[in-house]
Length: 581
Image (cartoon, rainbow, N blue to C red; front, side, top):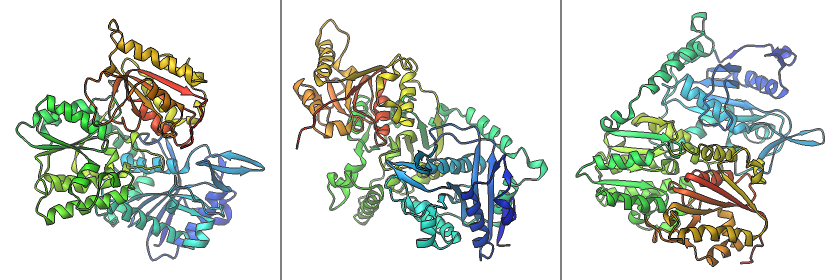
């Protein structure tokens, strides 16, 4: 048996069939034919499911929640599981979004196919086959009628099968599928201590019985899902905090992750620990908090660790490195320390904002720095992360790294957002901006919808200056309860980098730039920084200064909004002149 396809249709009839109330899309028809032609005589055994509908969807990693999922193709062999999303028509990328030609008109695809297929993949990983921990789950996107190369830094071209890549790279779809297995495996194994296993015959039979069950198996998804939900609901994480040596805590801003980290550190009486994060401001801030509690812990950023111990690297060299390059430096640093017999062995570790570190060889660092060189299996570790804050300008996604680390940790997901209990709109507006940045050209259009958030639009810098001066005067007024420590001004990075008159305004008002050197728990001046530098920190009141959004800004706006504890103001400056450097 080289190929078993479910359901099996005669190719000469498939294009005219009506499936789920609709005619088979031409792109899916082409891929179905390619699979049959290429895999039927393969030396490997292949199982393919076409147009498979699942009665649920894992909504944790997508922007638009779904009640169910319809997967174009699921392709299985002994090498693993591939989810293939198909988009027909002449697809191309314009301004970072996928489009297609409808006559003379350009239309956007309603969903990003890369995000779509990733959501389907995690549905299989988390809800259908949660016990397949060392099995490859892969994603790929097919544009079978696209005859040009799709080149864009936001999307991974290695995951694309098109008419162009078929003719110029892979020649047939089987070669593409084998490439996907190899590419996915090498990408993950290069920075994660995992070895993928091949699916055995009983594993393949289990998959077949799951997707094409006998009559008595028709409720297999619902029963498994309900059991998992009940199990999660009964977890007592406070008890587990004391009982489990390795804790992996996932939670959105305001769910109490930092509070739990402080409590965890205080429990480590007379033990030496290390606190590790990426953000310098966050590191210095929590060092001061640990000092207040007399906790024995070294606080250091990922960059500082490499610069301190690597024989030939400076901290500033690490900052702009791509994750894989940084991962290589981590490996070199640890190897050097082992050769010099200077490798530290901490009693415990706290990893904060770990979504910034997952793909920078964090797993290897944990393994080497505690538990007598076996930290993943014997160390005491608390790892805190929020996957919603893991995306960046170039589509960086670290979900899979988190997924495989769960093998070594007791994992908890904190659902209730305690910080925004009084102002739930803080979270809501952040998610709205992240999901639909094109709707925020004029932020005041949303004032009625978000009546607890201050949304102001400024046409000139003088009006902005007056508004900022009111805040400063209020802080300096002895009769006012507002303190400098209660407010932070966060400036959108591209606004500050342009050195426009917003930057001049901040300087003219004698505001203080927040840096690791002047960070204190009790500042006396109104402080400012960028949203990304302030990631992981918080203030009662946040003023976020922005300009017009584009596809590159939702991540930073989201981070800036979610730094607010009680009150959020978003000030949008429409007109400003940029200075020549």
